[in-house]
Amino acid sequence: MIQRIFLDHPATVNESFFEHFLFALSVAGALFLAAMAALVHAFIPCLCQKTASRIVARLYARTHNRGHN
Image (cartoon, rainbow, N blue to C red; front, side):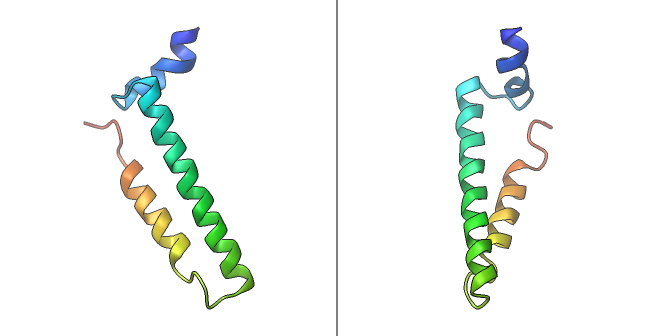
């Protein structure tokens, strides 16, 4: 059960639990920043015009095809 919950998925992208934890945490942080930029942009449209889009594009590039060696 522990193997399935904590280790099976990280192994599919060739990472340990801790490596996967740090990667997922970095993705969460980037998504938080993108959300904050979008919120600022919603209230003041001239600010952060492409910030959220750039962050999402970078995240896509980092995550697309992970584990497909």
